[in-house]
Length: 236
Image (tube, rainbow, N blue to C red; front, side, top):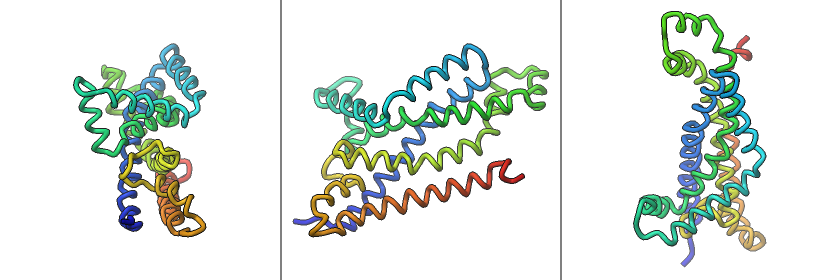
């Protein structure tokens, strides 16, 4: 029996969008705290964290993701009990996407941390921060109540622009056969299947390719619009 392309295309959109959202959550969970701490505490703390970021920037992203996914799948094959069993169950429930979430999240938080750090460095000596220090506010309260809300525009724009990057990353990994497991559809795996049938049935390739392109383009337009609306320099 054949497979309905439209049904797989619609279901594959759920996979791609879910990857984009979950990866952004992982990115924000790591990148925002690192950027806040590095920007607020200059000197040794900032230098150490930024050197770690520089070292991670040197690793090829795709290779790093492939290594993480290969390691996790090798571990899950031998797990029947223990603390890794819930992760194995979650990986099966998501069609083998746990490695994609972790891999893409771990290689994509660096840019967000730098953006947040730059924003904090420009705000940490402002009058409202000095006033908070004068009334005895702790560093954690200043960061959470005064600095973090002022970085939300940067975080929102970075998240919106990071969604298409995560979707493309998942599509590329699935295209190589390392993403979702069969029979779970993904736009990347559908494109990979359509390459072999390009001459006979080109619509099998072009349908997911067009859907992927339009989705990425749409998120890029939304990100550009939010950046223009939230960037104070553009408003001036």
